[in-house]
Length: 376
Image 1: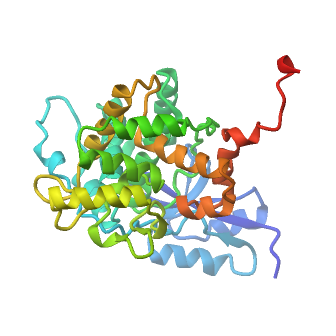
Image 2: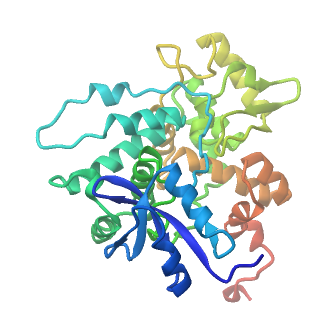
């Protein structure tokens, strides 16, 4: 049966209590039926009827409107976004922080839910910092009294401060996590507008510059780190998660686990890098992770970034070089040498070739056949 009317279920927080919002276009039949719901009330703020958020009240919605209207619940029920990363949850930094006066701290329930959902440690740090910025912007207000209008006002404030799109997106995600995951109201804030994605081209180094950076590293460990980031197209987090068992010298492949999007993949192992890794292993003798901290855990992400930037400065590279620029360079150089875009997508672990296609805009080979008009 095709219904001409539909009712969209929404999560509402009114007087610090969870409610089910009923959003629909004005219709006499629906108006009459909605008033049959037990404890139904009207909200001027949300411009919709609402009832208590209980199973009994939810069941009554389906019962009363059966055959009359389609109940749209796609923004009401939760879809899991658990990462399932094989990573130890570490919030020691959170517990060790010196407590400041007149400062609101992230609720324990927020941190516990991040742990339960198995978010990465980097995401945890970003979410906690962003959410604390938000709740301290409204220091004199209770968290649960804040609504969509307050959130939009805060986002406007971030825009006026010229915060980057990525910063604003993290802020939105951290706020949504509290209201939708911690408070159990999935998709409550789905109407919050996000900034338009920036279409910036990746920064790419020449092969000569990459080789100079590798040559300017301080020791064999640093050399292997920079070489692997480039020659395998690894993200920094993927490099840090590498274990000795992930290096398959017989097949000249590297097994990348716990990658972005919870996807495993294989990527290339360079012959030159393998020789360096054998030298490194004899000198440093790592026991589990390929690159270990002094406590035998994963190496520090900040240390990797500093190794790359210091080597680039030493090599005389004027650009600010990060580990991700080496990954961009790997993909671009493969494309310039004629490697099919689909293979590059697999090596990088992209979901779609559309993501990988950005490298066609920076590959030198894309412009080789064009003759500059000044040279004609």
